Image 1 (cartoon, rainbow, N blue to C red):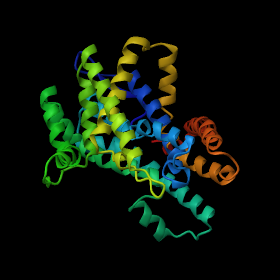
Image 2: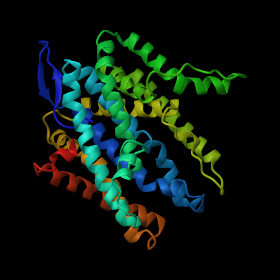
Image 3: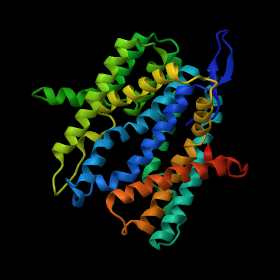
Image 4: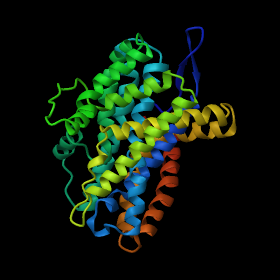
Length: 356
């Protein structure tokens, strides 16, 4: 993730430091959705809460929450493929890879120690490194591993996208989405299954390129309306599909696969909406844009620490409150406390590396 200064091409072909306000807004929106998702996920999938009013409430917000991580991929794609300074591959790696690897190692150790104390299990270097280089120490760290893979591909994608027209970029996006996103739709429609070629990159690269495309093109009012309608359709498919599959025995959430087209549609709608909102209602040098810039710089820290806070709240109050009160407590405490801890870390030079 790149959450600090953003390098933007100037009209003269050089570079200049500037904030892209709608990136800041998208980051803040995405991290709020991530915290909401992790606050309600265990309620959504628990059959004990099936068809309770609080369960339906959580289900209605779930499709929006699932767009959170795709938005992060889209922001990174737009920033690195459109606005970052093009340079040597190893220079890109040296500048960006440590910003992921160092926090990943440090926060993995923090979570590993906490989990060991929480579960009363012995610390083991072999076990720790097995998790660090395997599935990850905590469930939310999968995103960092996926983003790291995209960072490794980014210099090569940049060399392709620099020479693509919007139409050619759309074709490239379609090719990448075919195995993971479009094939399931065709297999559902056709009387036989298509066995696609193995994708060179995972479906997350599709969000990377989608962010690049939506940042590069200008959409008129009619085109934006079409994107919003697509997002509404994606939301409806996700919600209704998950509700239809749920039962008192199991809540599988089959539509929550991030590679499905409904997630692309919803994420695209949120991306376009934030860009349009910033263009028409938020002044680049105004107080709100400055506030968004400050909060945006703390988002990576919030991503790392919020799960730890949720664990503590669950241990302290998980059995004492009603479902809605527990969710409200989680959100009311986790969001401001995560930002506060991230701000505190950013003020300490020794710990600043934890924010990337």
